[in-house]
Structure formats: C-alpha cells, structure tokens
Image 1 (cartoon, rainbow, N blue to C red):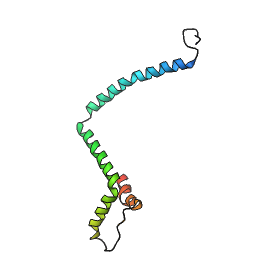
Image 2: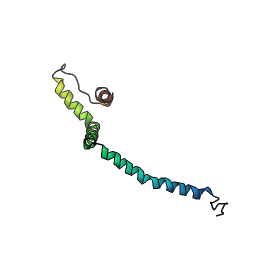
Image 3: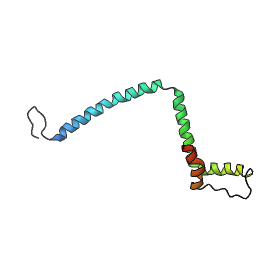
Image 4: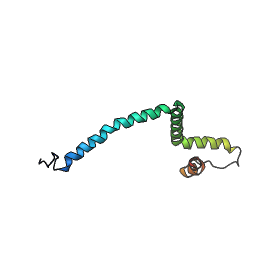
Length: 101
C-alpha cells in the first residue's frame, strides 16, 4: 500500500474499517443506557407484554377451533340448522378485523 501525506492510506478500504470499529465501540454504551431505561420500567409492564404475546400466539394458532367452539355454544341462541364455518373469510370478518381495529 502507498501512503499519502499525513500517514493515511491511499486506498479507502482501510479508513472504512477503522470507521466501522468506532461505531461498534459505541454500541456497548447504548446497551448500557437501554439497561438504565429498563430499570425505570415497572416489572408489571414486562409481565403484561409477555401475557399479550402469549394471547396473540394462542389466537393465531387456535383461532379456528376457538371460533368453532364459541359458535357451537351460540348456535342454540340463533336459528337452528345454520352451518358454522371457521374458514379464513369468516375468521377475518368476525375475529381478526374487529380485534385489529
């Protein structure tokens, strides 16, 4: 490699690597400040977040069976002989769309 005046590399690749290492050396200070922010958050927030994730997973994986069970229970209140469908269109209009709104 040839050197420029001032002792810097003529090729840009070496400077980029040094710049990248400076950015990565700042990263631990960011995680430290994140830890400080986490200390200010009540533990109940973390608990509620995990419960919400668990609920969303359950709804996502078992929505059709939950809806079918609920609809079977409601069948006696509605007109007899009505077929209960738990297809994606019915689930979207009856469950997911109202939940997301």
